[in-house]
Length: 193
Image (cartoon, rainbow, N blue to C red):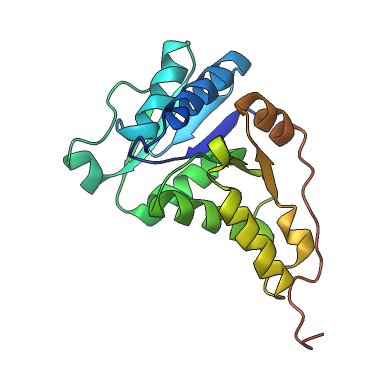
């Protein structure tokens, strides 16, 4: 893995563990020579992970829509910064550049990016690993809900294995690096069986 896309909050959250984990993830990426691909922001956890990678001598590529750049949210000290025309273009560019994806704690935007890239994996549009860095059990309720959805027949159990889940950055990157894509030839059962 040479390029890892990180989805995360533009806020810091209420627990110091979130910022610590973002910093540790950034240091882990730089230490392994993995280039960070992310949303290009300088605020919240986005800024923390980018700054940590750069401070440790790593490379950071940001992708930010023009309207967010104009609000001075864009990070100006990156290795590369792509300014795009829309949120859709941002996600497409990040997906193109990345070899894998990780979600740190965040809000609506983080969840939307995570679920879109996960859905693309489910549909076979890519075979890249998709991970959750479950800092302080932040994602535990969501994982439980996804299992509930599978139990109710809306998600195939084998599709749950598309999510690589870990609590520590080092462990998560190890798992992502060893990921083998799940192949499910028939993802939709039209008979209802």
